[in-house]
Image (cartoon, rainbow, N blue to C red; front, side):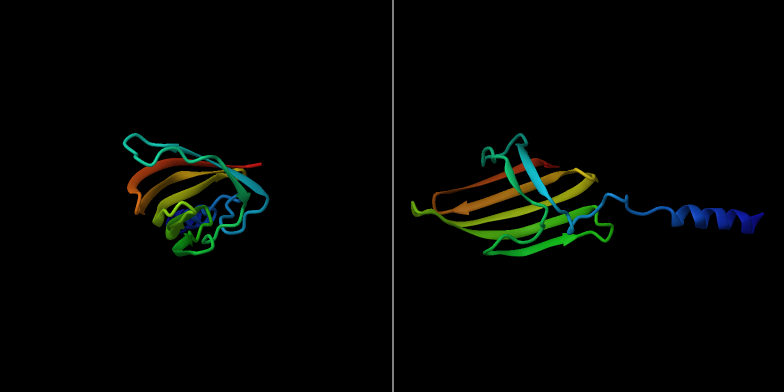
Length: 132
């Protein structure tokens, strides 16, 4: 009886793992992200963004984007240089965690730390990314 119970538990655990739809780091197609600023933020709204399923550091940025071994989650912590034609210079740091919740949906939070010669702000956003 004890061996039979151990076998059942082992078989049940072997069936556990990441859902079949998890593919962070290997997503394809067009995705659209929406950002809702949480109370207390000082940066203001971020417009909806559309892009490919590629997850990687944007050009000119440094830091890390780590994809979980289950391919269902991604951690973000990277910094980009800010430079505008009107003379604003500085950096913006993004820190967050995203989770794929279905084959067509990713959600999580992202905090933005903007530091420039024109001023500073910090905001946390609820993020929802949908496959188009």
